[in-house]
Amino acid sequence: MSDSEQGKSGALLIHELKQVDDTIKTRAIGKETVQIRITPEQLRELVEMLDRLYSDIFPENLIGIDFEEDGFEIIYYFWSRNSRVLCKIVLKLPADSPEVPTIADIFPGMEWHERETHEMFGINFSGHPDLRLLLLPDELKGEFPLRKSFEIDRSRIHESGLTQRRPGPSEGGEDE
Image (cartoon, rainbow, N blue to C red; front, side):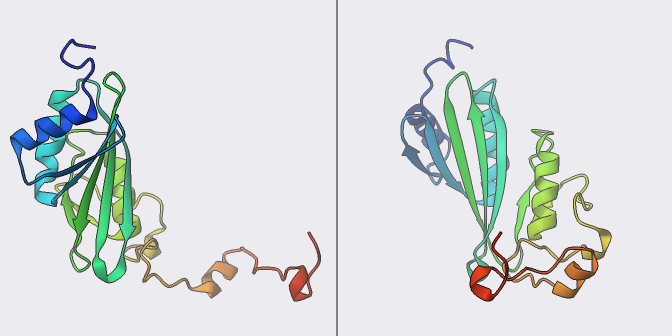
């Protein structure tokens, strides 16, 4: 750990972010966690800045959330072990055209996270090198099963070998 990284708290990160762009909305959550609300257009610059500020920072997670008419949120978590700072980056995306730039070229490990989020929510990661299906069968391409509007075809589920729900004891079924 370099001397400049040692003791870099969440409060210091907030201060550094405000020096670069005072439109970034930040909030300390405890001593080590910083929540950062940005627009999709600010994502790459912020991630590149975090990569410069912390030599050991890495993305831990990428989460998609569907708020239906209110659009989507993407949440990235970045962690610096040496500085003990957790960055929660939140982006709001419109319901009709959810799109955010890729960061897979900055952190190659994000390629699969972005593919999965694209596949499950239909959020486009512009500039991503490979948004083909990762987990779903080809017949579900473009269906986005984690969107709240997704409707499950129960006949397909039954036909694929999964059994229907068995009645519980209060419904006249056997006790398990």
